Image (cartoon, rainbow, N blue to C red; front, side, top):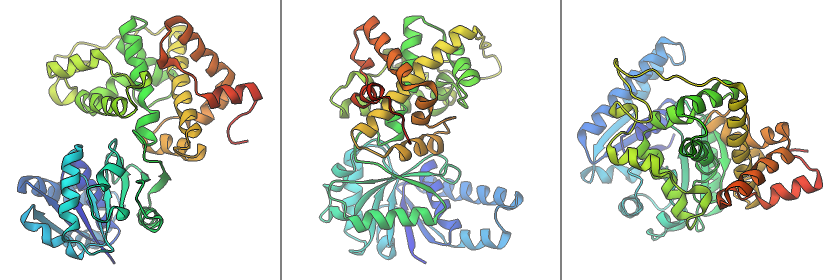
Length: 389
């Protein structure tokens, strides 16, 4: 059984380490901070105890897995990675930091070791460019919490060798993950297709079309999403959500579709990041104000149609630009972020002509390029086609 290295002992890194451990691998988990690796060990131990209590893992299997966990401090412990066949990087989402880490790793691992990045929005090609052997660098994007969420996006960079891509996908498949292939483009599949869920909710709020509780109510109770966008942004952290949006916007040469919200930026500037700070779009804590939605069914259905139409359009454009296949797009959105339907299948259900009509209406009213229909959507409507036929 191969040894797996994980660099970065935060929530994502510790989750990835847990996945590898329960599938029989020795895991070397490293961080610059001893406190981080100690917390990670405690989190993994607690998670395994819960799995034993719920019958998902035997006590002996948990003990064996925990015995296989080695924690080290960087940079002193870097040599420990020499025995790894796969190293997954899960450090801060900054290009220079990731490039430096891969250069360090490359100096100690064996030539055949796969170097994978868990980046959610940075270019795999750019990360790999810092390496002497960029062909062994690949994107392996897990979703949080990694032990629970089934999806992994496999993202080859421009230099990634085909056998590295296929081996990485096989490893993730062997860990009982659902894998999809994505081209190395901003946001990959999930973070790109999901932008309108947040962005259009913010746009409606700014327009005064509806308030945050009403938009959340509509998308949850009528649209079927598990959580409304404002509650979800508060849960994720407005700083993190805003940073991903801005990263995709910049990486797409400031495409109007992904333009960040000034309202959300102001929350970040104020330090109102959501649940972790006690205030975001909502207030949290024992004295928080109630969240009263205007439960107008017609208004709610208008909110859902507007947001879902833009999600469908974005998903269609991902297929149009050959970023991913139609089946992988729908699989990614249902398994990666728990959407009630794959957006392309949802478009079929609503009617692609109705989706196009809603987007054209918004564009005519606003003259804003954010409401630019995908050429493939327009073509499919003209030809009377549907997805998956």
